[in-house]
Amino acid sequence: MSGSYDDSVGVEVSSDSFWEVGNYKRTVKRIDDGHRLCNDLMNCIHERARIEKVYAQQLTEWAKRWKQLVEKGPQYGTVERAWCAFMSEAEKVSELHLEVKGSLMNEDFEKIKNWQKEAFHKQMMGGFKETKEAEDGFRKAQKPWAKKLKEVEAAKKAYHAACKEEKLAISRETNSKADPALNPEQLKKLQDKVERSKQDVLKTKEKYEKSLKELDNATPQYMENMEQVFEQCQQFEEKRLRFFREVLLEVQKHLDLSNVASYKNIYRELEQNIKTADAVEDLRWFRANQGPGMSMNWPQFEDDEWSADLNRTLSRREKKKASDGVTLTGINQTGDQVSQPNKHSSVSSYEKNQSYPTDWSDEESNNPFSSTDANGDTNPFDEDTSPAMEVRVRALYDYEGQEQDELSFKAGDELTKMENEDEQGWCKGRLDNGQVGLYPANYVEPIQ
Image (cartoon, rainbow, N blue to C red; front, side):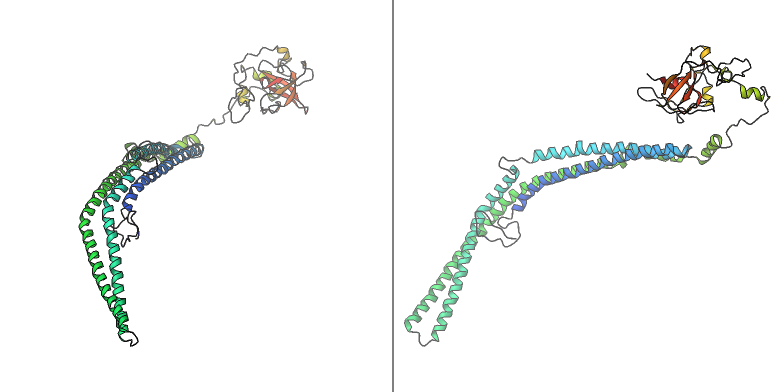
């Protein structure tokens, strides 16, 4: 590794040793690295917290989706409850992972952030106060020794140059002795040159040895001063290392759910729910509710109370006398009407025979079920029935006729009311295609 000291330009660094001039900069750089490592650790924890949050959300979504699928699916009984226990487990684990996310961000992340702020102090001109103090300390400790080292390097260079010059002078003198053309005066000059070169070698060697001795004498103090500054940097770094170890242990505790009592209880409860699944119990339930164990109204002999002719001609009004009203279900409303939920969106014959709480007050003369024959021989669709004034009406809901003499229509369809409603709440009407039949009076409204 090569480098140079600011006050000793030209001093060559011959090794990677800490004691070489300028090599203390690695120790100074470690302070800046400590600040960056705090940022790295915070980013690491922040990403893990985000993963915990996403995982918790995915668990919740998964549990919600599969809970609906299982509940609406064909699985039943104790095995269904055991299956759904997995979704309950996911919801509880999701809550725990959200707690982990909160601990990572609110405790660990904030702790590192506060420690970093207290340990590193930014300067107005950039950098950190701690870095500058270390830099100045090392520079001050190394400056005297580096100055002497520079002198040693200069003395060594001069000595080596003198040695080289001496060898050249001796070589020229030797060669001149074999040259007969060289006069004595020239030979004398070469000999004098050799003598001066030897004297220069002695002087430079003495100076070199002296400067080297001075450097050796200054080395112990140099090492002591450098050790003091280095130890201060070590103490600062030790605080960071110990703090990181402390934080990492806290992060480990927050991530390790195996030591959380509620986490253990989740899986203990899950195991218990799974073990309560009983195939025999489920089979017994299915037999009783969906199989041979269900009750059955088996056909029995019934007396013929009415003749077939009377049944064929019996008017609708007499059929309805046994009931007090009509119960309407399956109304699909639009606008601000209140909806009554029913999967079939229709009124069954059984439901029409149930009581309806509303009192209907139309006169019997307007009742399509009225009959002029006590025996029920008159059909409500006979031409001689007294018609009311025809009125155009619009359907409020869908209605599916349950019997042959009933109309079917959709919400929004228009039809003609031929007779006012009877006491059971039924009207006679005609569709635009000419079909005539009965329909519930409160399923329509007059067209304004």
